Length: 82
Image: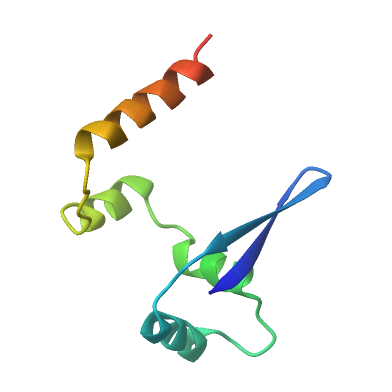
């Protein structure tokens, strides 16, 4: 597990993501010397269409309680709408 820092205006937000050890090792293999993980991720997703990324991910995630997830998503959307 490693921490990833995001800068948002004057604030630095730290997000912790969990990845498998084999994925971490693969990331280390493509990470350049002196490159931070933030820079690596930015480089890997640079010029990538979010829609194409979603299409590639389609079907590779299994949800234990899809209905609960959809309710949570809809509630979050409702909070953001005026």
